[in-house]
Image 1 (spheres, rainbow, N blue to C red):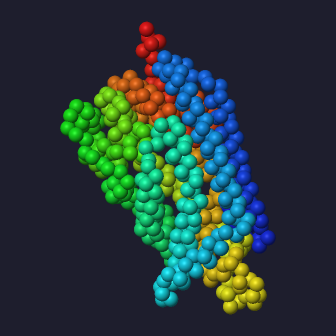
Image 2: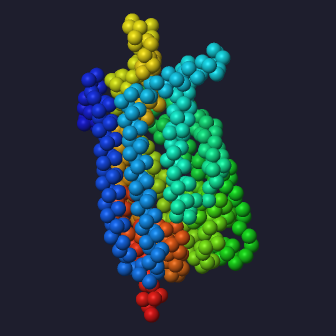
Length: 463
């Protein structure tokens, strides 16, 4: 704790170069991730099919998969470059205080005087409303290219422009309706417990996460997709028998119309760790896979439940939040931190210079704008979050192996292997990977790694 206190004291210096530090961290993160992408791109250019996949993946599919992977890497570098330039511009040209002041102008123009934003919490909500809309507009070219150029080129995109626009509108409206109250409560905790907020915030995030796990699948997802109960038949019987044999508390099985947006396939279950579960199958998975393969995939998913992986990740998530909020205590009431980005903790009446009063790159506030502090603090956290990402990827990859092993012990190893190969082909997933790149970016082992762990031998090799 002594080291933590020393760091807190050091960064309270009014001359601490906050802007340079955040820009430096952002550039460093970009260079690091670009280096990983470069390593992966070199591996893809070698066009070497992993030995375990020989006889399972034909040359045409393999080459198309490699081209798809290379296209995605090129796209990620371009989009990351644009994101970096935007972040630097926001910091260098004091966009945050300008957006804050612009939000106040909107509030004055739209709402009667008695309803206009006056508290820091209300001002923060108006700021976030303004910033989220700007982010949506700035992100339109990247989002459009992703769906209608990149995914379209390789035959995955099923979106129409109309559906894409409707999804954005629904997403933004949900952000206002749900995200607004959540942000309000988040900021209100800081307002009520200025120096003793840590455990209240952690409890708040736990409640939000639990509610999201319960409510999102039932009320939010149906706003975007149609969930149809799986028809009676051999597949449903197979799934129900599997659930019964494993002691899995199955409630219902749904098929979701994922094909109206993409031809990618997936399957998952929803529900709290100790409650009944709903299994969801993508219609693309149902149409492209055999009953045995789908059953094997679900055995893998049930393996996650059996070994409490969801609960473990929830606990780790809470520990992560606790760490972040503890670190946030070092800057959230640091005046030099806010001043460096144009947020001055003084009343306008205390300012004599008219040039300052008329400068829209400066915000005068009586209280700490916690939302601004938290947004900027996330940039400071980038190096730590990179380390956390490595750790989380390692943990989740281990969990995937465990879930595969669970299916293997139920005699479904061959069916699971066939399902994974089939999904790999249909999704054109990356087959050749750089170890460092995959350790950072992939939460799942590669197909070759999973087949090796399952001791899978190609039927052609057996011959």
